[in-house]
Each structure stands twice: as C-alpha cells, then as structure tokens.
Amino acid sequence: MCLILKMEIENLNRELAAAGAHNNYQYLGQKLTPLEALVNGPFSAKPYVNILVKYLSRVAVKNKDMIIRALSEKGLYTATKPLLDLFDDPQMTELQLWTVGNALHVLDDTSSYEKIIHLT
Image (cartoon, rainbow, N blue to C red; front, side, top):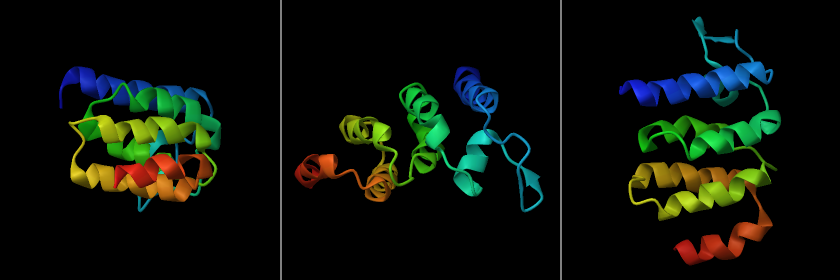
C-alpha cells in the first residue's frame, strides 16, 4: 500500500480514537482499529459521522469500503449526500457501489429517494 494512502487511514483511526472511538476492542482475538471496531463491533458511528464523511473524500477508492460500511447506520443523514456522490466517481467499482447502495438503504433518508430512483 502506498505510504500516503496508509497514512490517511492511520490519520482517520487516530482522529476517531481522539474523538472517543473504541481503540482497544477485540474481535475473534484480534485487536481492531477504531474504524474496524465501528464496522465489526456493537458501536454506533453517530458520534463520528463527520470524521468518517471527511475521510470518505480523502482516501483512495480501494480504502473507502470500510468507511462506507461504518456509515451504514440508520439515521446518519449527514452521510447521504457524500454517499450519493460516490455514484459519480468513475473509479468506484460495481461491488463498491453495491456497498454504497446498501448503506443508503440502511440510512433510509427519505430525502434521497428521488435521487436514488434516477440512479437506476
């Protein structure tokens, strides 16, 4: 992994930890990063949605998946527009766009329905 790309993920995890995200959570015997804990643990991303959205536009396409999955929580409407914007990114893969679609489904932001309909 390119050093700059790795640094962005490390910066994200540092910022999440500084904001209070779980930094010592273990899952199946493995210590998880704060981002991994938000995706795989029983924790809400609500307190960290602004941080996650900020890094969604900063990280390389191949590193967006975990952020998208962390944002897959009902009511995180701040994430709706940045997630919808990913459909305009030609570097996003079809599989990643399925992940975005799932996140939008979970968010269930009624203000996004018209835009979603026009994506099909």
